Length: 310
Image (cartoon, rainbow, N blue to C red):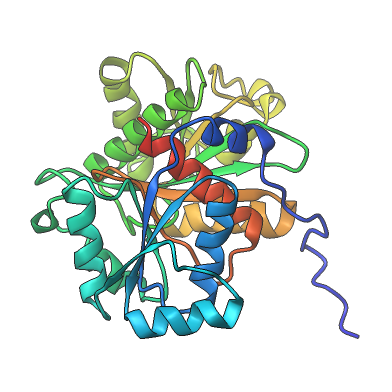
């Protein structure tokens, strides 16, 4: 038998009970599942419904939805099913959210690009023209309730300064809604020194300066290398003074590669549970993946339910 890769954690992720409890005390959101005609997304929304995190609305090819539901033994006779095959499913989900008939949208058996193309353009009516959306991961260590909010590791590929400002604002607002009284946010870079040859360090310094006036409810520092973000000892050794060091609630990545690497390191190498949503539209959007385990799917649904209640 092949030995497991030595850097993979043997610890199984667990949904933080506090996140579930906070979500379950809220009104159950109506969740539009886009292209619901496959076993995996139906299992995901059934799990959410069983934990009182979703009132499912199934969108897609009606016959395929019925077949997939039979395959997994899911009784959908009491659920709303909307016939909108293929690309039309995303458009229909946007319509339901726009008209107040859905509180959250969940990706089903559909390519992410097709899914988002029907939801995020300003023509879909779910966000103001010129506004920016962000993906935020809520990541918790095993046996810990405290989250790290990581943005953006799933939507904005190479965000400019204005987009990172929007990501930071969205993350601060979500942190406050999660009960973090004064969020501490770090702007990730390779070094804490603004260096012209590393443009994102200069940009991070500008964002941190902007945040002093734009986000007075948060402590924002940057640029910060990862050791300074996670380790107060490293900050003390290097003479870096910031209330964020060793105590960050939020990390803003300079690009999707850095953010995605941190997310996967924490999940695969540290056994963390990561729920994620897209915010900035009229309703939260869940970009669920077929490779996500049940704890991550439930954490995402819980996070979406909390965001939907804002």
